[in-house]
Structures are given as C-alpha cells and as structure tokens.
Length: 209
Image (tube, rainbow, N blue to C red; front, side):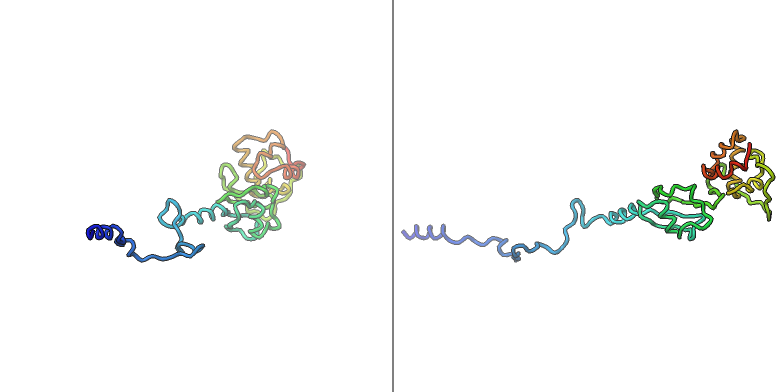
C-alpha cells in the first residue's frame, strides 16, 4: 500500500520549471506598439536606400542656361515641367531689343538645355551650321543702298542695311549661300537660321536675287 501511495505522489507532482520560465519578460499593453524602433524595409538591412529621395529631387527639376538678350543671363533651376518662357522670366525677362519670334516659348525644358534669346536681327552664333565666326565690320555708319540688295552678291556689311538684319543674320546669309549655292528666290531666305516668315516679310521689298 505504501508503495502505491508513493507512486501516485510521484505521478501528480508539479513538473520542474523549464529553462525559458526563468528568463525575464515584459508585458505589452493592448494597442501599444511592440517596439519604438523603426523596422528595416523589406529586403534591406536597415532603412530605405539613401539615394531614393535624391533621385526623386533630381528628376523633379531641370537646370538650364539662359543666354543672350535677357536681363540676367545665367544658370537656373526650374521645375521639370516648366517651359521656355518660364526660364526667360527667371532670367529677368527679355531686354528691350530681344527678338522672341525665333523661339518657341511653349517648348518644354530639358535638363542641361541652353536657351539663347537673340537680339533683333541676330541669330545664335551656335546655329550657324558651318560654325564660321561672325565678324562685325569695323564701320561707324552703314548707309542704305539706293536700290534692292542682291542677297546673292551683297557683302555682310551691305546685308546689314536691311531692316532687322544685324551682323549675325548677315553672316548666316553669306554662310548659307556659300554652302548651298545662290538663292533661287527671295523666299529661299527662310532656309537661313534666324529668318522666319515675319522677318522675311520685313525685308522682302528691300532684296532681290
């Protein structure tokens, strides 16, 4: 009988505490955050890549160079969806002798773009296809000719007597006829950089071929 009692006592005795039960633990109130430390993003070892925000900032802006007939030529940073007219406004706006007809003011900007605002009668020297230097004649007064100017034979100085034609446009006319041959008609002048319909209409009565 005594053996049976001892056996029953051994079976119903409390189990020995486990190793884990001896470790300290903290209770968490309902609704409280488990940890105040930020969790790393999935697939990383800690935090978002540092270049993500910088890349987004670069993509949202465009840096452009505004040159020529503006109040404050220079390099400007604008929103990526800005237009040419916005860049010109950032540069203080056009000067009094600026010729905006040769520009597309609604064109979108590209990062690293150069915007050149010409003066009346001028073209951007970079637009001359041959890259020939534009030389301003060393003269004090250029007198108007007695009749129409032959655009196939006139010198750059003589071409400057035409309304709205400055040294750059005159040089571009000479450069074009040397590369492409004589102009077959007055309308052919539109192939010259810087001469559009408005400028052609202004000089049409003063030129001949």
